[in-house]
Length: 134
Image 1 (cartoon, one colour):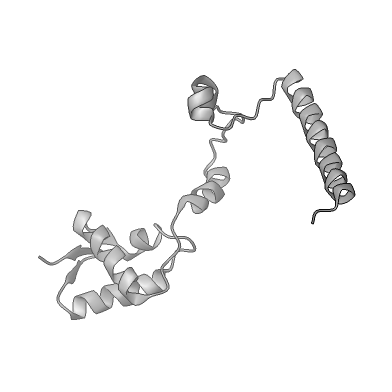
Image 2: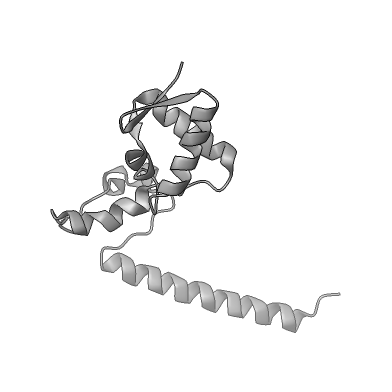
């Protein structure tokens, strides 16, 4: 059997919390901040991304941002081989340009995979560029 005092105590706490949250929401909306549940549907004109900061034109300032978009060098060999084969299938690359596609430029790992592909007859080096053998 439910204890009516306990049940009403929980309801009062829930009600107080809801009232406090509603006051907070109303204050935010008065300041112009609306938290949409489905912004793409409810406010599509507000869901579009906007530029809030000026971007620097120097290469030094853009380098850290570029690292965040680069993929990490895979840990397993099979994925490393697949990625490099796919990249070489698109166009010839130097080992340095392949390594530059990944965070921390894993030149040693890239060279190891390229050497393995060459030993298997799947890649060939012409000057500094590697290409896929078809």
